[in-house]
Structure formats: C-alpha cells, structure tokens
Image (tube, rainbow, N blue to C red; front, side, top):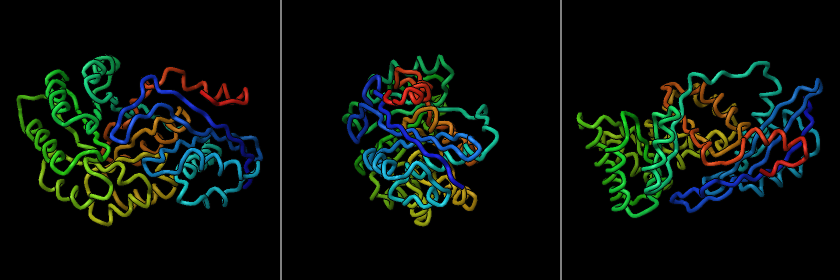
Length: 326
C-alpha cells in the first residue's frame, strides 16, 4: 500500500528548563508526519528523539524524512533501521492511525506528575495535587545528595497519602544508590508514614546492570530501568540478563510498536509507560500502547503538560499554515 507522505519539524520551548543528571534541557525539537492513503484517510505520527537517551538525533530524523519521496510503502515503513527508533515509532503510529477505524479510550489510565528537581518540588506538588494527581515523580542526582536528602525529608512530611517515584537518570554513585534505597526502605516499612516510595528509577548508569540486579535483591524498594531499556534491543537484552522488576517504556523512542507488542505478548513484564515530552499526537499513540500493554496498571509518566506554555493542539493548526515551529 502507498501513502502520501509529508512532514514538518517543530520546536517547543519549556516554560522552565528541565534539570536532569544529563544536563539542562531547554527546548523540545521533533517532527510531525502525516500519511494519507489512496482513499484519503489520514494518519498523524510524531518523531520525538532524545539523543542523549539513546535515540537518533533530531537532525538525523529530519535528514531521514528529507531523503524520502512524497510516497512511502508499508515495506519501507517496516524497514526503517533500528538506529532510528523514534522514526520507527512515528511512522508506524501514523500508519496504524490510517488503518484503524476507532480510537482508544484512555479513561482508565492515571498519570504521575513530574516535579522539578531541587527545592522547587516543595511548591509544585500542591498545584498538581489540586488537579487530581496522586502519584508524583521527583528528579534526584541533580544536586548534592546532602541537599536532596534534606529536601526529600520535607517532601515526605508534606505530601499527602500518595505514591512518590524518584528518578536519578543514572546519576548516582554505587554508595549514593544504597543510601537512597535504604532511606526509601525505611519509609516503606514505617506504618506511621502514609506515603509509598513506589520505585527508584535508573539509579545507576546503563553499563551497571549487574549492580542494579544486585541492589534489586537487597532492598525492598523496587528499581525501575529507564535509560537501560531505551530501545527494544536494550529491553530484550536486560530481560535476557535477568531483569524482572520494572521497565520504563518511553514509547516515543523505544522503536517499532509492532515489535514491542510481540515482546510484551511473550513476556508479561511490569511496565510504566513514560513521556518523551511529545505533543498530543505522539502522546495519544503512546497511551494507546500503554492501555494495551500495561498489565499492572501503574500510573503512566505523562503528567508533563505543565512544562509547556502553548496549547499542544496548535501543532495541527500550524500544519495548515505550513509551519509547525511551536
């Protein structure tokens, strides 16, 4: 089958730059794609790379789109190489939208709210809580462990009955990871504290899987892999090496949705689907996968809209004016 193919690059500026252990992130660059079949049915897709997380760069994604003709086939879509996982996701998602007649309902999906690193989290959580958020994620490994533990103690005292996730983005040392896990264990076994530390996300770097496997066996608090399973190949590799705790799935960069479905149909893994700060186009495609593949129904990590000022739906309006620079 042939599809008419068009694309538009876009840029969205964060209201406040996002601080992680990888550095400061100020703008989200991506590509919106549109496929149209012979009966004029349209499918939208989004390519939203995060190169420092393991995907292709934005420049590589744009170059790939530029090299394509204005028509693309199913065979070409399913032949996109693994070195372009965000492109795989964007094109397959657009194709699925063309061939599917109904949309997925996300009413049963709950989302965690992302808190900023450092002291700003102490103010941000209240606004999210008032809007119905009951699971929060806080970035750690950004400032000194002494400073973050002090803020953490305040958060634990202030947060209402809820769940808290800690995300280190691979930024902790072995010793720091143990300190954090012990602190979390102390909270999780304390009946007087009505707060659950759901998991610590990617405490150590990607090349320290064996150490994280050992830590997962020594502490009560669960560990979730994130950067370690950024792509399907990494996901398969970590599973083969024995990882059975939580897998954070960033659908926008993991690669082919069809291959992800195949893997999850064989292995009933514990997943948390998470945002890559995409627009509503990529988010809907990712949430569709989450609704289909999340067996333990954990809150998804898509509570990030407060990081942008503009209305996401503008991307479709701007398409009509031949520009998707947000």
